[in-house]
Length: 614
Image 1: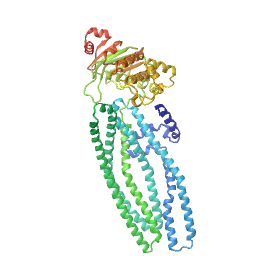
Image 2 (image 1 turned 90 degrees about the horizontal axis):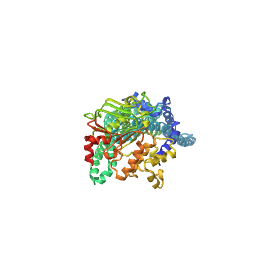
Image 3 (image 1 turned 45 degrees about the horizontal axis):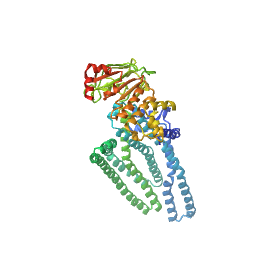
Image 4 (image 1 turned 180 degrees about the horizontal axis):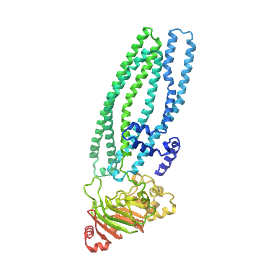
């Protein structure tokens, strides 16, 4: 399924579900979820409860239907005890009672089917609402977070939060709002029947509750720490696995398979060790609770047997109390069993909050909207340093780029060329000085409105696993066939498209893996052309390509940059001969500025660089 088809299919499926799932105040669920985290920061249970505001009634209905579908389980011990008592006491109405009880149980059993369906329907509506909303909230937040955040955070960790942590929160929701309520209902039903028939047995049942509470509290803190350690180790593993997969071509090319396996093995054993410790704690936790309650169940059998022998209860009531005591034992044991899941879910709630509460975002709200762009840039004494950097990358940069002018940025690696591009597209803002676009300071405008007039062709082409057509028209609606054909010609893609059996509808594979480097780059240029931008950023678009591909791309670049303000970062100085101006960047400053011929005549830094490449 192509990317566009997947998007359409996903929207069509969700439309039917979203009619049932509504957030409070009519706002989008993902916005509401972010507000929940802000309003209840540091209180995971309050956050979880707030996520379902507007859908509480679904949980109430689910509990009601659960009660109805389990009625047969609660009634059966009573029916069994009554039949045994009728037989042992030789009740003359025994035959009629047996028929009545049989019909009653069959009806209750059949009732389980529709009640179970309704229970699952309302439970799933509420939990899937939270699951989808949380993932949408994370995705929206990731789109808002700054580029520096994404550079500093491993993508594998973010993937783990979106998939694993949200799944754990969904499990926590089920346990907190349904399983625990269901457990309470089971225990309540058993105790209500018991207290009506024998206060002595009722008080005996209550003796188990303090023991259960002490068992749970004693393990709670240990479980919390173990789950946190395991979760962090899993995030680290997810990040390393993604890196390993991306490096497989390099690993294979240098015969480093065994080294990579060894490196990953140490990480996998670290996860296994954390998981092993967690398994032992969970096992010990569960077995201690199980043994304690089984001992009490045996004691209950002896206790009720003694009461029956003394004539305090009927013989059939032994079965009744034993069944209900087993119910209470199982339900309290279930609470103990749920604690690891609940602990894991609470840790995942906090893990998701690390992203949703991050303040490292690009702030555009309330800033000036740009309606049109001329493309005149001014860098005035610009200083910039990366968050973890020790010194300025740009150190008093001054540069003037006129409308429609093509400027090439050259210099040694680390001189600040790519940083200048990142300032132009607004990924970063100057620490000191000003970057002006048509007289507007980039720090004071809504960058989203500005980027509508911007196109970027990076050094490494970024394609998604759709068709060539989908990759070209990405983000553009209503593109005509005529315009698409013009763009294909301008990007020198015509020969490629005509040679493919499916033409523009050919799948490019993951990351465009079915295309060559030059073909991927031309698709990127076509994607930039289709937007008809006013400003172009080219980051070494012809690097690492053969001479034929370079020639085709250079022609496509010439078509792309015509009458548009263009910034080009290039290491091959021969490719920028036709640039209007060349800026030589050194130590974060523009040390030489002029045309190709002017700089060659001066015989300065640019001349020396050109001589080295000759």
